[in-house]
Length: 343
Image (tube, rainbow, N blue to C red):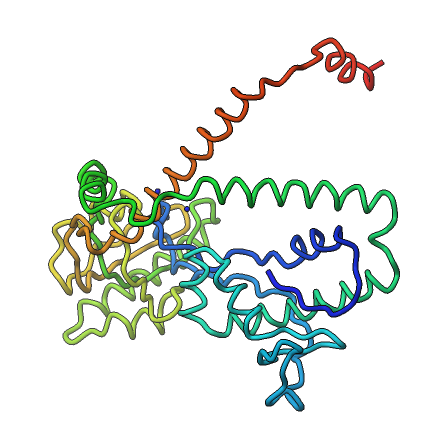
């Protein structure tokens, strides 16, 4: 289905390209995608949060209240002699993709993190300028290539922007209808489990111990008023009381899936042996499979359609440019160039 400078000091034009490269921030949380199939063999590890950006020391806020740039804009952060203004930060956010902007809106702390990274970059840039590091011939040549590539990319983006208002409702509906099968949300199960670790290659003593533990747990489950979560928390190797949350049907391994399909809410499966041990599942609730409605996916479709149209416009522009100015290649020289290092 698709940066910021205000160092007030002389610096070569080439440094702008370096700054643009240094200020690139990793994309924030991506839009939701369909999860890859996963085995329910034991309590799944919760997804780890994305690794934070290397944090520079928190900037002091003292003295910034009411601070203005030479243009009269509010100063939102400062390091050394470099300021980050409110306008610069707005431009930074505007330049981000829709997904990154959505992530910032959801977690404002990401903006503070980004500002700290920008401040760290400003310190590095100040040192670069002071040492005239960017004026070394080898570095200058690399920066020229970076700037050239950046300018070409920005220009190509500017000439391949789809018209405002594209796509229209009819186009969106057509794409939605053609992709209904890809918008199906599979049936989901809310599950909890009791897990007894017992790898298939365990020795007989360990296996016997696991089976005895399993027998004891089964007896407790059959007792009147048995509390599945409590038993899981105290007697099994599952974590978090065995809570597995909501799992899409394709995520569940077939041996367990066959036990769950047709199970009544609140019912418990028979023990199932997998490679890692014994599993007993309790079905808490289910959600039927459904096709996501157009309003639910409209923004995603618009972004995809505009992205595909932009790629088409870009290819057409380049093709026309090459048609008007046909390139001429010295194939013999190119061949010799490639053969040279091997000789």
